[in-house]
Image 1: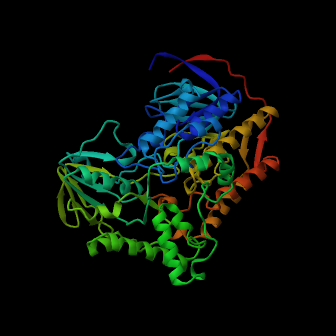
Image 2: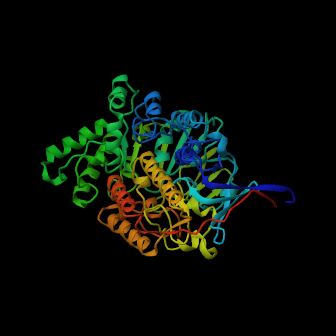
Length: 549
């Protein structure tokens, strides 16, 4: 290109305008930092902008899955259901953007393609697909943990002539499946949510399942005034309790081991949790994720529920997971998922031992049989935790790329920063509680930690912050040690990178608990940012200038 374009200079560039990016922008602006945010989508909302597939819904209760930073906001907003659907959560994100006038600093439909650290200027040089260049002291990746859709490489897919969709990049216009034969590939969280809704519309749905998933009934219901008031009357107290809790959300946790009670009491406890609904089922006993014997009792209970619900015994057995402990893959929460297999227009195909062989112009071959379809829905998940970060050409000191440094797996200190990449922050990055927590609670904690660090640097005349290698090494080891004290490594989950061919196998989130992680971060700050090093050299002044691109 030969046109002239102005290169802007700001204190911080934010990549992403989901819940992380919105709160970052609000905080940084209030603290007096000049900021630009770039979002590849056509509007704000992050994961809730892209994941608008039929049945998309949050598995954290509405009263807990929301911002806590503004009392008026949390008192004013009304949620229609106990577990909110995607349109309501997206409406909330838009409301926040408008309420705090955030849109003026967000550039939509723009992808950050490269970010290189200039060691001489001590600034990040950021480029977008629109040809814009921005120079920033700080680069903050608010790109989310599960935001790069993964479509499996199956022979012949490009030759398929029907419609294809991915739940993580769903069209914004309404998709009509009336009268169609459709395939759904994948039975993770998005597939489990979408399949019951798709079955109500399509003429026939064939579900291709590689690995069955444990799923719990949500027992969703309309939000009642009494329940809403029970939260809003003491929201501040409940939010503080959430911040110090294990998961970042309030659940009724039993302090008894599963095998310390009688069989009758254990079964009654599971039944009660099943009827209440949602993920609190995993809090039925305190050792379900650390003791295989205890976990086996919970897994057996759920499999028995599946057998009671699904009328065809062969299908019921295929739907019942048996190869990994319950809770070690992302636990799913559904509305009528298992009941859907009792419909005449729904069929299940097991591809666990023999994957889909190939696509054809009108369908696909699996298990030696050809299936014809009008549309295919991929519910095949994401290149989680690192995939979106690697889509940006991020280069730190001496031009080393982040992807090169993380070749054997992500390396961070506190899931926040990576050595040799100064002034680069990651919100809920690998090595933080992130996806093993109530994401908004973790987002707020990370944003507050990042913005607090920037204020500390401004107040003390510091130009650069970077983790020490020893601190990073110690944290990487601690994250794996924490995981190895649980049953999580026993499952080939996306927590372990197992859904992406060739991806290193290690546990990526921090499983030590939201409250414990917060304590560690608070102690780090109290100890003078222990584990970080600062450069007090004044950053090079950066007046606006015009560059040829």
